[in-house]
Image (cartoon, rainbow, N blue to C red; front, side):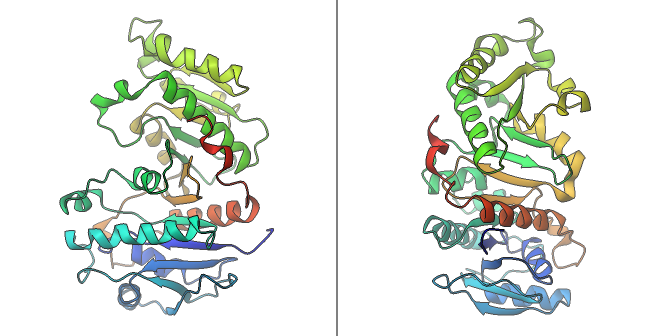
Length: 343
């Protein structure tokens, strides 16, 4: 590692397993300063319920980061709007969840933290509070003024499976209309740039899914591949991006094809993510590309039924933290810059 990073962590929905996972990961030492952006009393109560020792101290973002010892956690306090009970959603705390994200993003934008790691949020309860919210990716993009965020998930296995999404949290009816030449090309530029700058891949090889079955079957099952996707891939290749396709999604995710790929670009959420989560659910990490900050996340939801039970698996959060620490330690100075150049 080139330096000791500071990682800000938002546990997410207070009624879900996010606070549990924060308490669990605090039980081990980390080669970074982990700062939980949360209500300290929430963390104390959840640690007590789980029977875990947890010493909290106030974070000082103006000082150099200090490695986190086992059993301790630095906290940037944000107060809950209402008492939180495991498994019981309360729309009054939606504002709390969003404020933790703003505070954490501000620390990264100000250079006080090297990366943001997010725990799971409950989109429905935020919407029920009257705030339009389609997900972390879109919220952080708007807050950070990023024109085109790209969601990419990666497994922890070697070699990793990396799947980026052209569209994210859209109804299936809206997907085809969202696929444009400009969006495909801009997404490929961001994906290629961040694979190089953040992951150290000198010449990324990207496989691109078609939208329709059999990638349109030469136009008989849809013309998006012929009229939109293929011309955008031609433009990407002229720009020096190794983008291959469009390929049928039902055969692209086979070992023969993946052996020659660094990432896959899927056209929509449920085209690519079921395969990835089957391959590595408990060690998969969500990474947002195209932001001026580094953000990783768990790849699962709030699991309200497990909150406070001690049965929640912290594997995905550990993987998200490890990747955030690795990327923050090795790619300082690379964030931002040309990431948005193609958008």
